[in-house]
Length: 343
Image 1 (cartoon, helix red, strand yellow):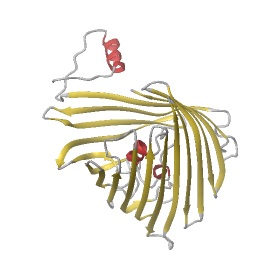
Image 2: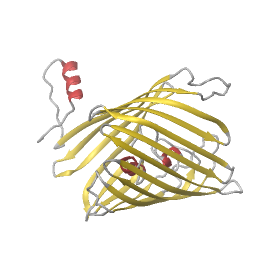
Image 3: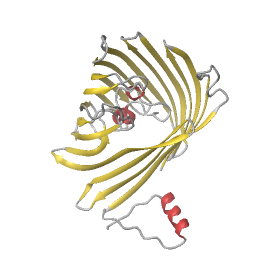
């Protein structure tokens, strides 16, 4: 074992618990531990089934907790095995999911690595890093619409060139949290293709245009009240520009689903735009979403705005206002205070 990299928090916890010298053994060349915590206070005018305020008096939540370890392989320092646990606060009940559990092999093909196991899906992680960076405040557009998931069982090929990146993979198709009746009946082929005008290594200023989509065979209806399933196809186009002063991004999404047990196909489309303004450690952010489903004429709008302050490289505070409008449910307005910790 050449080197072990432990976070100071984990090391202190081990020493205190053991009250003695601690020996950690591994067949990996390097172990990297990390974590993420999202602590929120939300005030909302949302009503419950009886018409009472659900969160009207304020609600504290440990929204998400991620614990992660990467074990780098001795023979190839760029390849590793990764495990990430996702603990989600669901109205005071904590549920633990296995979000990632995969082997990553670098350069298995020219300029291409591969993830095998429960892996990243091609789109959500990209948008979180390049498009809408306040995902702790509110998830990205396609994720919140349940169009695609951030992780799934399968295989994902990741290519990176000087001005081009892509992810292409085959997946189970139902996401890492959803295990419906038809989870083993069909597969999903997903892809993202991105052109980086200023280069893939430039993170301070970039102008990227992406296309992404999937063909998901026998996809189960996300809505828990029905067992409707069918072949789902979705596609989007996304553009983003960022420099030291601001970020602006937008996307258009189209989705169709050939339902097997109803007479009308499920189709929909919509768009999302978002922007950031940077003032040193302070970021002002805003986002507007629309989406409409043809089958039931359901239309929804989301308006998000707020301010984030980077206290240090590990801690960010944010205050936001979120308005949700749907044609079939009452509007919801909420204010959220967030502490976002990464270590």
